[in-house]
Length: 309
Ligand SMILES: C[S@@+](CC[C@H](N)C(=O)[O-])C[C@H]1O[C@@H](n2cnc3c(N)ncnc32)[C@H](O)[C@@H]1O
Image (tube, rainbow, N blue to C red):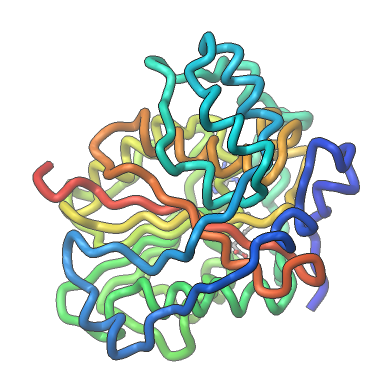
């Protein structure tokens, strides 16, 4: 299957983008739960699987540390000696206020997204091992297939959602920009075409979804705070939001803070969206890169809506 995304490290200097080679340093002693155990764990308040943290790379964290008058110095110090994205959200001390400015959410191509996504792209945006890793992660984090009352929302969806084969629920909604693509997505029971950068309001009732996914697309959101607040509103208490990303993107359409930073910075950025949106548990990062250095890296940043909200 052809890929349409560019590897970000072909666009910007490798020194800024640790990319796959940094995750190669991340030895893995992690094992996903088997399906039966995962099933037993699917309860409000339980977390999806995580693996041990070994380190971090931290250009952007350094920068933010300086911006926040040394608030992050302990994180960045360990970041220099270790190298693993999973460390980024451990014991993070967030600045008091959302640290990004309007210009951080500008794109090289500011034309309406409806132009860019007007033609369907029946392609995949990450390589097959990365897709398999994401599907495996979903299979262990999702509620069991066909559970009465369970509803999922796939944000920035297309003709594929990478859900486990045969996965179904009464309600699986896809939101995206291209109707042809959404129509072909076999896992969706319904879809909505909506430009979230024009209208970030999610057209759903409060407390209605168990899981929200967003695969390799969080970097296109120019109003992430609005979208994440909306995600919090429509998730059921204890509901799970799973953001996944690699090191590829349509770089002309990705926000500038994304294209000017590296993988571990991206983890911090997405973690900050959860943190500043409010109403979420502390976000966690998982590196699910399947063959570090040999195929596309794959990272998850997830959180749950606090159960008492
Ligand atoms: C790289 S594709 C990823 C598609 C799919 N999630 C996958 O994993 O293959 C980016 C997706 O983000 C969606 N997207 C981009 N900009 C968007 C916007 N402004 N509002 C809503 N969706 C958007 C597009 O519809 C497109 O399907």
